[in-house]
Length: 220
Length: 176
Ligand code: SF4
Ligand code: SF4
Image (cartoon, rainbow over the protein chains, first blue to last red):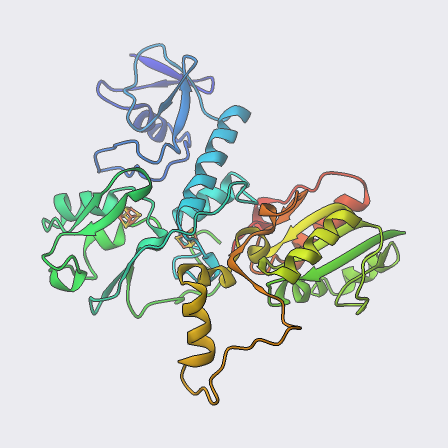
């Protein structure tokens, strides 16, 4: 059986598996945000950056190959992850105390896990449009990390194709596929996978804020 | 005796309240720590200190002046709480222009009588954008949270009093 070495542990893999998939199967954790089992990976957040035979690569897109030496839990990679997380925070507007997702947010949890105490960089405070037009679902673009999970879930699971990512670099933004560009003019429902799948507080179900007391939330 | 100064810039004093939430643990510190400038002592000017705790971000020129004074006088400067670290809730005004903010607060807001924008010369001039303290001065340590839990202050002070680098355990790191 073909194997890879993950931080020294010899792990078997099946043909076609990525480094991330074989780590998950072996219960070895590689921090990640935009990767979610069941969805095609595209390596946009880079949080799963690992060192494969001396070269940096995103574990979610890299095919596992026999004999690979993969480093995950090293000080160098911890610094890489910290920088990536800090950049994700400063390029959006993340006011956790005022965010309904706080305590159950994967971005926040990833930052806690890496021991992120400060931003280091200068916050951008970008001005992004909120979409509160729909009666049940809200988009707060300030918190979007462009993981594209809603795009894939809406297209591939819900069969609605409501979301897209448009623009490049600093102008990247989440768009809604309706004539007005507003969520109210789509057939989205609060039960859609696209709503549930958002790892941060960018797509929220209305009327449900701060339901779970502090201390009892998913990652408290 | 270790000399400690604290201040609240663009913050809500919540971090100071959380500091006091150390309750009886606080008594252990008062024997080793002397308070310099702080809302606790009401001393208004700062002398040479070993540790400075800064709550709140920068929203006006007075905040900036106080922060610079703290940096000049404190051997170790700690940014305490979400507002000091990323601007926090006050930084939500950065999404609007200064004119829009002032108009909403003093001219067009609901229930305003005798609308006028305050212009007393004693009032500090507002900065165009609220920003975190690390943008203006070097910061030695950060204590996240809104507010940081009392236990985080304890870990910080215990380590600094021993001359060690504070290491916050995972369970004391939170941003809300
Ligand atoms: S989305 Fe997550 S990181 Fe951003 S403000 Fe909300 S809880 Fe904080
Ligand atoms: S809205 Fe949420 S799921 Fe969609 S791209 Fe942004 S962060 Fe990802």
